[in-house]
Image 1 (cartoon, one colour):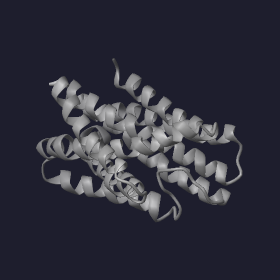
Image 2: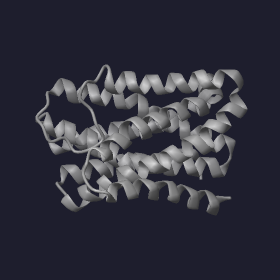
Image 3: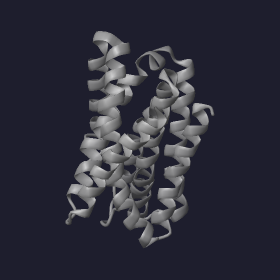
Image 4: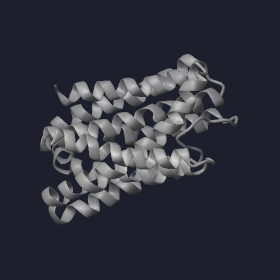
Length: 235
């Protein structure tokens, strides 16, 4: 299948996460708490064992700086320009400005998700599928987070789901842009490595660490084990 098809599936995961919170599906919400921990383990594993080594091997001396740039870019857009964002259900009232700034920050991240999928398949099917799996796993809590923020800002469920749909569209745009923009094709892997590390370690891990109980910690290690299993099956 084309990388664009995989990006489309991941975009639908954004919408699925939004529908869970918009429909107040409590069972789905509990499942998504576990998904955050699993996604964190899987994404860190993909970044450290696949994306970073491939980026260094193919990108040479510029790769570490591109990785750092990707890491800093996510921090700037999600936690500097946006002062109120986390991967999880928003339980406090927020302003429309906060919800829109969070959406703007996430759009850059989801664009790079598309770049990561395209760059992964450029290297090979195995890496492409591993990156795709990592993207899908965090797309559900991502859609939940943005939809929850829009609902907390007083927007309707339809608008909240549409915001998640916008994130999915930028993922598709990231895949398309990688085929036509030379620097993205050349530096897509290190950029994806930096962004993936940030989302996993600085967004998802703190989210489940802030909650009591040991099951979520086990889900995190389960995400690492799931990566090992998927990588072995693909190879």
